[in-house]
Length: 256
Image (cartoon, rainbow, N blue to C red; front, side, top):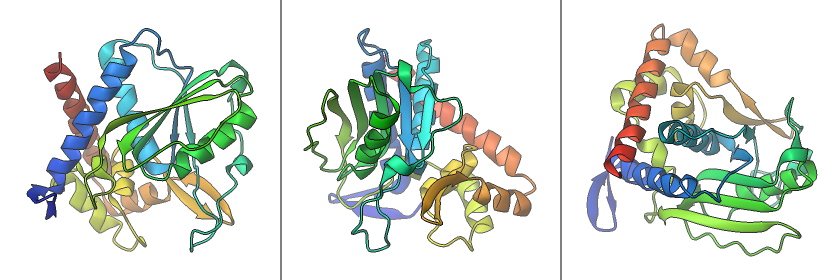
């Protein structure tokens, strides 16, 4: 990883990523350990949402708690490249098998949160498809987020994991050792605007979000490209997923 100057400290991106991962895991441990917090649904919107939902499932497993159902939505912020027109996330289709009639208490997870467009877009969709929703808890690294909307019949709570370091983005997705990251980056070198989140999703066996024909959706396109170019992709995925799970377990054990 290339070093970066952050708040007058010379830290590697990997160190910054681990710092954010540690804060996120500990906050989830505290939150899920409270008896009153029994969520009916875990929700992630987009690539970073998928990553932290995967993280939350590992925390549930380590704590011996039953993980609620998971909803992954390809929530989108804007309809135009200039980012002036908010995307109407109510248009997103209902995933097969989703039963919103039993949903009241939702835990929304994201890596970082600034203006909250993804959280708001996801809530927009949920209010249409989960008529009895009354509590919406947001967990993310705080990039200056403030909830400034009144939502009828829904209590919205923001639980920050920590304050975001200035000028650092997608922090948790920095925790990819180069032995895993470099081969996938090289395989996907022709992908426009390839980012750490997409590489991490491929290694974790998760699809990535695309926006085509005015519709965001999840696709396995990046995985298929990487698979065609990397005969050992399966072993890279298994190795990284084991590494990721061990990082989470180590943080939880150390915080006992």
